Image (cartoon, rainbow, N blue to C red; front, side, top):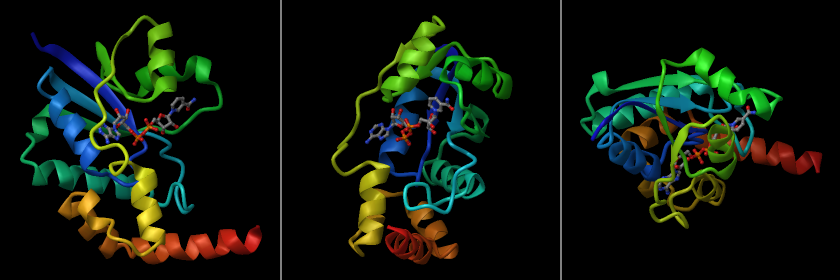
Amino acid sequence: MKESRGLLIGRMQPVHHGHIQVIKQTLEEVDELIIGIGSAQLSHSTTDPFTAGERVMMLTKALAENNIDTASYYIIPIQDIQMNAVWVSHIKMLTPPFGKIFSGNPLVQRLFEEENYEVAKPPLFKREKLSGTEVRRRMLANEDWKKLVPKSTAEIIEEINGIKRIQHLNQKEDSER
Ligand code: NAD
């Protein structure tokens, strides 16, 4: 039976095929999905190269590319806060009400379980390749990162000169070491 509304939160630095797979699978279980763009305050570093607005654009276009009904999800940027113990309340303040949370991240699972939410742990697809860490590693090494992300995400990264950005930031970080 479908739950009415679920929540999935991710940094999505950048959006990759694993995110789209898990979103599609989650939408089989819920009528509506709230997709939180985590660490919304972070950008312009090698671990968090893209702004929240850029990530919203990547996700919106990737979901359209996959023919996902726009009435079935809400995309909400969510800044981190210093206090893990009240993070769930922070999320609740920023999102529509939800009954179930979907996450592969142990900290996210733990914080919601302690607030008595039902937490689903969706399987990870091809995690050795489909992770933001691997996509960013390939971007820095000039290896083929495009096959790990939706076509529309690759186009946005090109539009915003994302590879030049992350490679430049890596030089800066090297010189600071
Ligand atoms: P992520 O982008 O790595 O992953 C998001 C979700 O996508 C995961 O839960 C996982 O279920 C799914 N996923 C990723 N790769 C997949 C694959 N290959 N196959 C299938 N599913 C896959 O993001 P994350 O690190 O889980 O994001 C958590 C966010 O919550 C971060 O921004 C973090 O800072 C934030 N957070 C903040 C606080 C706080 O502010 N105190 C506390 C906890 C978490």
